[in-house]
Length: 535
Image (cartoon, rainbow, N blue to C red; front, side, top):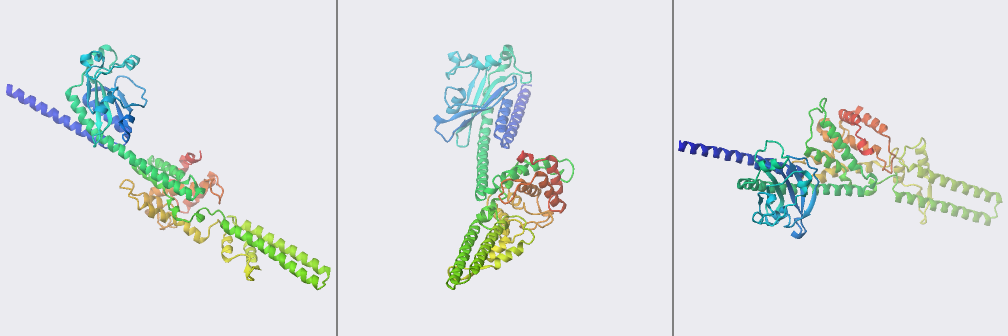
């Protein structure tokens, strides 16, 4: 009987230890997979409280690890209490030995206090702490037993502290509400509780450091992306804000697609990582503009500004040349004793010639605007182009060069075919640039998503003339966002913003022509996503 009982106890103990180990392993996996720092800290506290039977607790993190110890602080990050509802507010306190959490962090030691209310007894207070009962008196919740455990990283630095309060005798008997509850239900934390808490704190410290490192990497990524956007906008200030607005519209459309429960995209969902991938791709979709000449990017009119100024200076010279030729002819007539009527005729010819020059200049300035040319404008340009003058070297030159005439002949917009090809090359530059970045598995599709936003479902887009089955849904969403913002943006010097209704009509034309995704357009219109950027 004795052997059997002992054997049964050993079996039960072994079973309990195995269950405990399994639970610790499961907890370790759970906290190792969490990347949101506040969720992680909440999970650490919840699991540590659960395995030790604590009614309440808090988690602090050490701030300023790169600073000298005297300049570090403890930030109160998470608080939980099964007995009362607390209004939680984050705050920081100095990292010093006067507080229990500060002492645990500085000494890297576990502090196990059986009863905070007994700290006024010297033999039960080897640490010299004082229990401030202000919170207890204000809330009616008494803090008695307390277990404070430091969390360390792999370099043996304390990066946080777990503080557990009031170990429960019977965790399932409801909240602690009065003095009798605290006297009957609260126990001191045992050596076993210390060991379990330290085990979890070790795992938690590594997970916390990994999460903090992950957060640093995330912030680095965010900083890089924002720097890239700033670089784009410094090259092309006329489109300032475009990348951010396209990102808002594209991620917003992805959110709406994720909610679809019927139709073409009913089965399409986006994880948090996929949403971040879409956001980064949208922010960087125009980064290739850094590879396009700045004068082409910001070209607001058909002629570059130096070209326009050169033409005006040339016509000023032509005007003076005409006046000089007329004066020379007048001088010759006067020497020859010509009739006054001939001189009057000469003056009238000069007047008409100068008026014609003024007319030519006015027409050139009108034709320079990126608008549709009126009927007969090509004939007018031809008339100007064939007119000639004599430069100071005696060379006979046309009023306008072949290149100037070609630019002014543009029927729509401000870009020549070569310049438009150069602008369109920005997507190739975008792909080339983004493909050099080691995005990792989570964001591996960013180059493909970002560089395809000018592709069309019917294969008429650029740069690769992809067709519908070759274009990702993320890219299709970005295409709609990009077109809409380009149409409605009020910051383009070469065009006026069009009203939302007109922009939607233009998008709908592309949908009817098989260029843009009809279902995504429907969702975009029905959810009125443009309010996120236009108010």
